[in-house]
Image (cartoon, one colour):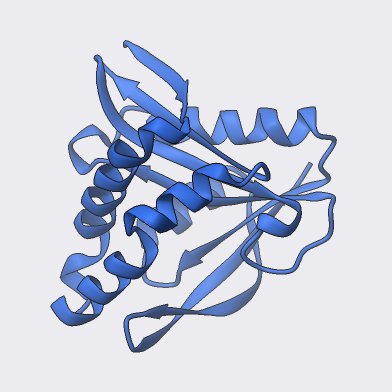
Amino acid sequence: MKINLIRCAQEDSQILQEISYETFKETFEDQNSPENMKAYLEEAFNIEQVENELANPSSHFFFVSFYDEVAGYVKVNTGDAQSEEMDHDSLEIERIYIKKKCQKHGLGQYLFNKAMDIALEQNKKKIWLGVWEKNENAISFYKKLGFVQTGEHSFFMGDEEQTDLIMVKRL
């Protein structure tokens, strides 16, 4: 299997935006209203937002390519870039997004391994993430990796409040 990992740079903002739109829509479009989906995509993945996230030194993005096609990416955060207030011994996996047609080929595991490498290099004590309570595939994946639910927080999809489960893996 031909898998490559590529660190995202500022000049990758357009590709990152496109794959964010595509993967988010594929995963969540059927369970959310078109209005809320549109509002969320425009807020979370507008080009200015993507460029600001790429410029943050406490956030790291890596594309995964599968047979020379960008198939997805991982975004990890440390310090103040984390989406919840956590201690400095924590690393957040904010996103593991894989195109639907590229799923079930080990790419999520590959991206998780990169996040784990970063956490270990930085001497982090835990990795955490938020996952939508209705995203059963992702919850199952994270449980297999040793994550346990420790809490929950609100996530807004447009004007609809949803619940994300907070899951943690101790290192």
